[in-house]
Amino acid sequence: MILLAPWFMVAAIAAASGVVALHFLARQRPRAAILPTARFVPDRPARSAGRSNRPTDLILLALRVITVLLAGLAFARPVREPARRSLARVVAADVSRAAHPDSGIGRRALTLIREGDALVVFDSAARVIRGSVLDTLRMLERSSARGSLSAALIASLRARDSLSLNAERVELVLVSPLALEEWDLATASIRSLWAGPVRLEKVPAAAESTRDRLAIDFRGSGSDPLRASLALLGAAATDADVRMVRGTPTADDSVWAGQGDRVLVAWPPEVKREQGANVAVVARTESDTVGAVIAGDVVLVAPFARVESPPAGRVIARWVDGEPAATEVAIGAGCIRTVAVPVESRGDLALRRSSRDLVAALSAPCGGHRRFGPLPDQVVSFLAGSGSAPRIAPLENERGRRSPATPWLLGGALLAVALEPLARRVRETA
Image (cartoon, rainbow, N blue to C red; front, top):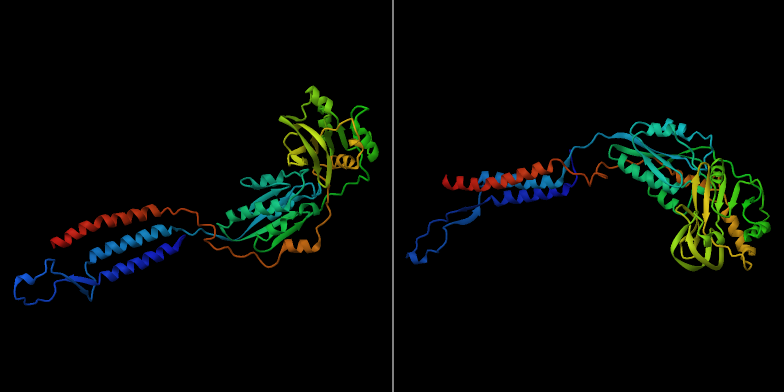
């Protein structure tokens, strides 16, 4: 049995001690004194307070002490201390694109996880798996999204809080290739929130892209200004893993993108926008003009007539005011990017270096440029930490629990209060 708020019990014991001390002050008749006349007798009960060798009114004393102690115990919230095992694990499995397709992350995690442990599956987002953990591991599939160690650590912290109710120590096991692209500026600060070491189970990383140059299969009219951008990039090709469609993609285009690590760029031209035949983008409620578009480190400055927006998805490019200008959604093993950046056929916009850089940025592999190289040794050492998993105090995560005994204890205190008038009447009649 443990008390979730023991200071209430301490206060109750102090109050009960005060009640006992007051009962050593007895009120009794004073010593007899001879008065010359009755005029000098004070008009008040002939009682005076004095110390006694034993407490008076033992029944009242018992009722009052019981009332105070029961009320203090009720607010102290007694609960039964659960049985806690010595060690529990949070197993974080990396299913991002950085893991090699044959890395066997699911099989590795199966050998590490035990009954009662928590499983975290992560790529760009992390989720705590509850329930059928073993079935999830057997059906684990690699995704095409970029991995995020920050997301994995945050989800692991949440899982640790639930496990610490039934375990003295919680260990984090990270099954991941630990690729460069999975570390971001927030990872170090989030890692410091996990007390103790992290057990690293490194798996093989995926191979870096073997593309020696940018190649784009362009599907558009011969007079399209983007043809000039591709020509200056030297990226025009008929058989490439990037297909740029200047219009609405067909079903065949979507099937093609999902059959491999391919990028389908849907970039509707201004002509389609005027005809209202485009379904790849979403019409804005109000049209306006914006002065620049940003994609990673690329900034293209020009007056753009913004009349439509890309659909929901991972943001690839933004307007200078922060609104999405291009988004990406996964489809099979590839992805579809929708670009809502108008390119005027008049002027030299398509010939600028910044325009060519924007085309290259929007044609990058799914999830952005890939960096599957290993993290530096000093970063891995920081991530792993040292020592052993610290012991978690039993009350650390119990503060919000309710005690089932509280209503009964309060009821007992109220009953003792109700019995006090009866005890007074019995004493007066005695």
